[in-house]
Picture (tube, helix red, strand yellow):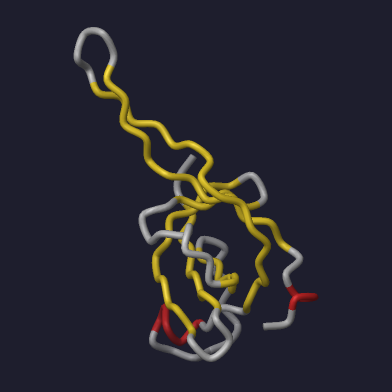
Length: 107
């Protein structure tokens, strides 16, 4: 993995469940881990079945990060002020990295 390509910062958040005095359970996300990442070009063939290479989908992003054990498939990711869920999580053994496909969540 080319360390110079890791120019983007990703913040991983995990779900925290807390119970208040009345017994109501509240769910919030808190910061779990921050790391640097390289942005990859997404392939339109995977999304639409047609490899037109002219479609742009700003809802999905693809990143490659180092293989940190702190990163889990259940985390949410904050990038550039937007929140994403991990849609696809692939460990790559050749260079000890993780390829993440992220899907933008509605605000």
